[in-house]
Image 1: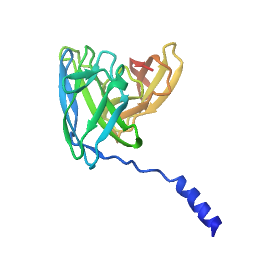
Image 2: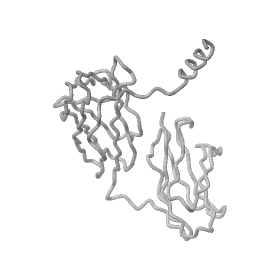
Image 3: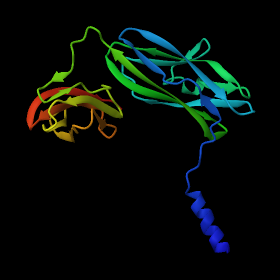
Image 4: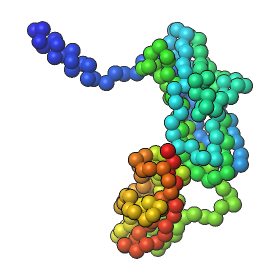
Length: 237
């Protein structure tokens, strides 16, 4: 019997632990969409659903943020750069409090791009007590020349976000489902790095670039083994 209980306890130790999250993010669809050179501020609403006072620290900022874009997290009138002031961002929530004095400021920068980012808050007394605020952004340049390549068999856009440090995507649409198309990625000196075949049943190619060394790469669209267009992809650390 003791052996059985010991084995059972060991098995339980391998089961995933559920989060003790007691804060709910009431703000949904946090999206920044605008033209280069502008900035925007979004209000965030969170609720402490417990009957105790809770404290949370900003643990990290994760996601793809362009080199010319800037993000600030504001508590009231005090704003922080999450990349530099990580340890300074702290929230104290009263029991059952709905907190409305939290804001995100996004500077659209000077480069057209798209991406997403996440703020991860953790209770310093219990690492399982956490909550995440996520957002997406789309920066457009009204004066830019259309970047889409319109081939007789396929239309395809440019990679985004660019630069990227984790995930890069390309939107496309097959006009001829019988055509074969692929994206080939080469290093700056021309060495092949990766190759992706485009599926006519899909509309977006998602590429994991997290394992690539930071630097400049080139991606090429091939249709029926013919070189159609080559563009630049920048991978950041």
